Length: 324
Image (tube, rainbow, N blue to C red):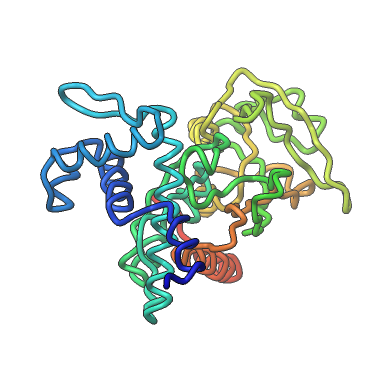
């Protein structure tokens, strides 16, 4: 006599082995953008990959790929489905490793988005040390100052200048990065050195536009314990990449406020000179963000711990070197 509980559980099964295999082949084809390449990687025929994708499209009643004679491209629905499936398969793999006692070996693809200055002067220089510790983790770095959608774009982590008000994101502050106003010796020789914030009115101040709003970012100065915003003006503006303003300052275009960690080498060699030091000390934060999930992958946990520990030590020792 059949056990009614077993019958009930069997009747509720959503995925058989064939369907799970189809999902794996679909994800592989999406990553490689080719049925043929996916078939080669999986050790099956291209026809098998095509049948797997068709099986999923029939089940979902949506098109997952736009197919041409030369390549395939995910549809909008296909991309959303791929991101969810990729995350689910990654969690299954992590669960297997934990169950078999391999949880100490982080593995898989780690996708992280970060702004230009923090990427070049903080994170990229220490990535080889992370991969030396965790060689099975592949790191896909996207350097951009724009806001991202974790679910839609498949990112695991992001570093930003502030924590958004989204309740589904965990925020870990990495540091409060000190700001400094600098200019080249040639510019100061030509235009003079400002001695007060009000003097900036008579100077060429290089602007940077905020990626999120397009408005010019105010400069920050400290007066006692108070931090004050000051809007400047000038004939040069940089959008999207704050390092553009640094390059302009190096070339004598004007004054620019940026992070001290970006121009430490310039200050040491005399290529740039700090101005208005009496009003310095203001800072902007850098925050590590990742989605709040019941199961955070091991590679994400390892990378978060690595960044917090390594960057904390680098700031204390002041030894993190920027890329040339």
